[in-house]
Length: 93
Image (cartoon, rainbow, N blue to C red; front, side, top):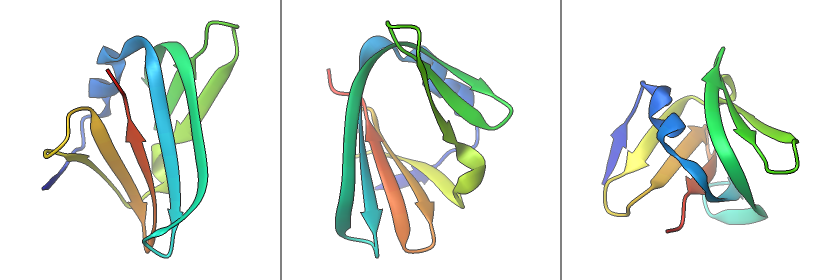
């Protein structure tokens, strides 16, 4: 079950762990997968900023998506959607 979220500061609770990003096109075609370790996440001006240990940052603009929701069936699992394209973001334990 998905629950839409609007308070993106919840992502700032994740720190010193890994994130996995799965990018889907046309609802179920996985066209890209990415994953990395990060120190912390900040939410600034509609953008999630992942600070990595090497000093680099990775950003995701929430403004690029129509909706952001949490999947309540799985812990630490989020879905960002725009039309029939989406990105799944999860934080493994």
